[in-house]
Image (tube, rainbow, N blue to C red):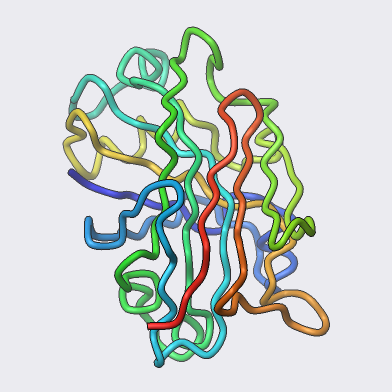
Length: 209
């Protein structure tokens, strides 16, 4: 399986990081070692001095394909899950590639509830929220996605042949801890929740390695 992520896909998130909105999707990947389920711990490694959670709508591919037309993209989607793109910001912004910052074990919690396209359509109009210890950090809506789910499926399938079970993390709304003043980093003892309308809540405790 592939875990394909889209960076800066909410204009307000790009702005809070001081970046211009991308003119085409910014793609990066995570590896299967990052995956954990609901209730599993996010483990903070000693190399990470600032760790952010990122609440995301995740697309799961049901029917594979190559160069899928945007008009038929939703026919290839099995459904949607909650996901958390955990990121070591101190590493992400000190290196030109993001593989290490986003690739530590446990850095991709994934919800166990899959909601089909028949219920959520193209994934638009869904509220996406991150809470840490009950306090809201991120609160956005997928109406603010720069690149929609059908566009992303079509665009990504022109690069990688998509296969059943592949995951696409569609980006995160504004409010991440790195962009706050003062900054807010995950720490051992925290509990992180990602909630997406129509899907549910993904909750994970945070521990030190």
